Image (cartoon, rainbow over all chains, first blue to last red; front, top):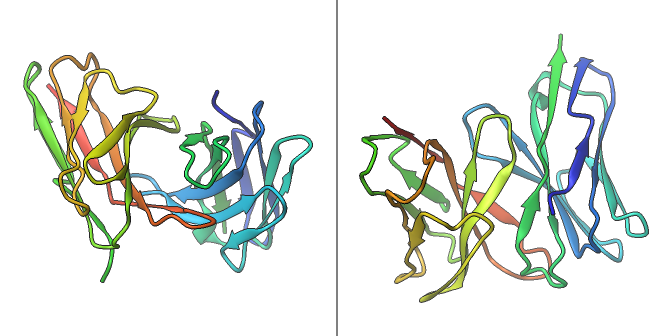
Length: 112
Length: 113
């Protein structure tokens, strides 16, 4: 089942902060976050594993609440380059080799 | 430079024709994936392969076929049985390990006329 992302869209001014949430109805091994610019490939941002380990971008932070099966992506002091669609991909397979199921995306627009 | 290449970037075909999309990677990754993306939607998994000569159906495999004869290559054929093939197709690969993050190619936009 597809994870649910919220909000569907966010509009910010440069320097403002945003939080994007991703919720799943399944027990997850990992949550993957990507950013996609229009017409381009998704770019890897972060992976969070159950148990607390994570790997990803220096300037972006995220959390994973295992009890709620919910992950949040925190975008602080936003820049124009942060604009794009953010997707979470969830792995409920029990190991890192499980397939990903992606949310519907959150459109982030940053204005000067 | 290591990476994933997809060709062509844009592809136009007539209804009823089969078409094959290319995906090549030189990252030495074992696993490769094909996703379909429709406007305003997320990515949906078509097929994936975790090792050469083996592949599994994803969530929307009907009307598609794949092969994995070489580690570097994972071509996708969109057959005439696919009811609505016009979409953006993305190929990805991953190298395993604790995180097994996926890296994506630039995509092929297929339009069926």
